[in-house]
Length: 67
Image 1: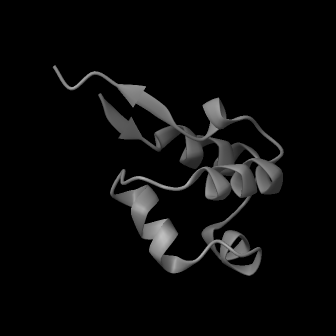
Image 2 (image 1 turned 90 degrees about the vertical axis):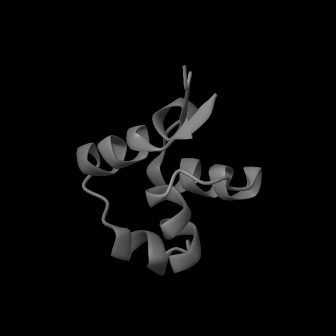
């Protein structure tokens, strides 16, 4: 299984939220880079994103079989 943050980018586009707006609300550059590289994030970060975007974790991340 691999982590895939493509739902995050779709959700941001649907809600007209930019990366700059995430930065202003406390999501740092290192975390944004983790999203782009599909790296792990903490549950606290996931919760913060859900609050900022008014969505559920399924709107941010998905798990994909790497077979």
